[in-house]
Amino acid sequence: ASSVACLMLSGAAFAADLTVGFSQIGSESGWRAAETTVTQQQAKERGIDLKFADAQQKQENQIKAVRGFIAQGVDAILIAPVVATGWDDVLAEAKDAEIPVILLDRQIDAPEDLYLTAVTSDQVYEGKVAGEWLVKDVGDKACKVVELQGTTGSSPAINRKKGFEDAIAGHANITIARSQTGDFTRTKGKEVMESFIKAENGGKDICAVYAHNDDMAVGAIQAIKEAGLKPGTDIKVVSIDAVPDIFLAMSEGEANATVELTPNMAGPAFDALDKFLADGTQPAKWIQTESKLFTQADDPKGVYESKKDLGY
Ligand code: GZL
Image (cartoon, rainbow, N blue to C red; front, side, top):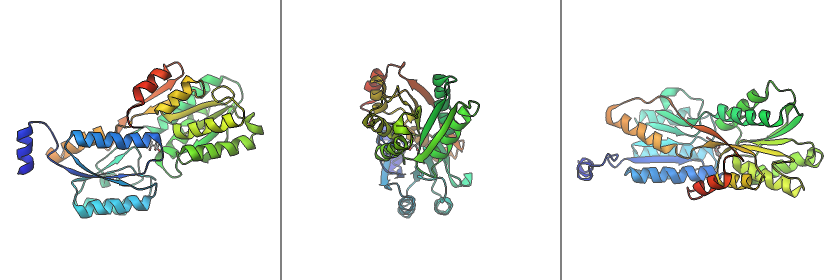
């Protein structure tokens, strides 16, 4: 009754003081930090009480957090699933407790009736856009690519690899010589790029680095510079997320292309949740967010300014 009264009083279409649990992976990248900021802002604007749990990149911590939310009797649960498998049991427990679950920014291999919807980009398409940019950039020149993969077993790592490979498939002059996970972090991205450079004639044989996110690309850029090479010219740099720092690198000519990923997955998630709780409307199982290519031709300094205060 009190929540209805508050709704009547405020007259705003606020969610009647919902409590939502959010199991976030961690803060491995600038993009993830922005997603957390935006989710908290979205909850605040809607009068939602958000219970936040940082899993420090561990699935077992996410599962523990979800069980805690179920025990608290929250109204709904958001999960950004660190890996694609191992969710069936805990999601079945949420279903038994009649608590709707919404997935943010990563898909999982589980029966669709175990979650209300997944709000993610088309990660295969992101990889394809990155690959198509490189195909266009190198023409028929021989180009040896090294790949920094995202977290092993995560849907973006699996999908972005596939999309990129699809894009270069018809171009025998472009080959992926080395591919290893950098776990979506700057530190690991730099470390793995250093090993690629050592293994490839001091980096002189590497034509491009494809990183599954900008944070690993920024790490790779540091490694390329420390090897005495010019990122963006000696070794092309293409990645995904469109975080502010990749635009700074682009404005210095040190990065070439990125595919934008919105950090606002929570907006569409809360909209779908509101409708479902109001009248049982079932959303589509996949709510797709946009993917847009940015290159040095797209005023990187201006884009940096527009993004730098958004919580990355
Ligand atoms: C993709 C998302 C990825 C980002 C990375 O949807 O899960 O996780 O691209 C983040 O920056 O680590």
